[in-house]
Length: 241
Image (tube, rainbow, N blue to C red; front, side):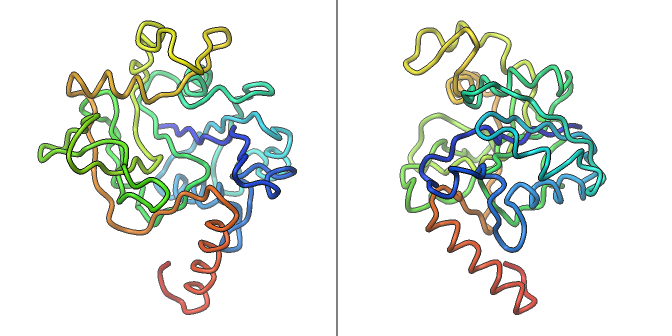
């Protein structure tokens, strides 16, 4: 199994910190955000990790190298000067990911979730990790039903944690599904993965699970500082964050 880390975004809400440093390389708890993920991926036995890059792309390889320090092989999927969004970025990286299901994790989140719990073979097109809605996203994203299926609508939506396992064929009909949605481009393909998830959910092809533990969307300098304080305090006390 391979993994894809989304790290191409500009981190505009994180400025001025991201004017010279990509958001996934910002330190928290004594190491860059992305390193927390690399350590988890290595611990679960994954050896090949694809990192999609665009904004300040030249910073990643000097900081992370070839991944050998974590027992990994890092592959960089360079999207050019403008990020291709989640769907376009995934499509662009397929040549490096291969045909098997792959793990996806957003480079700008932190969690204590154990990646070992993710299925290697999702029963449908995708399996997503869901968490409680944070204050900045109170309406959530998708509803998780009693059968473990995710729905686009529901009474009690949860927030997508930015962690999941995807099959490559979720992208098979992207042009038809995306259509002329605002903010998308077809050359080069630039689009979000959410409309493809909605389409798959309508056919019962997306499963999910709920994580009640720690999770943070590190989207602003304030949230980064809060997480850093929490991790540093936990390390000083010798306890779990």
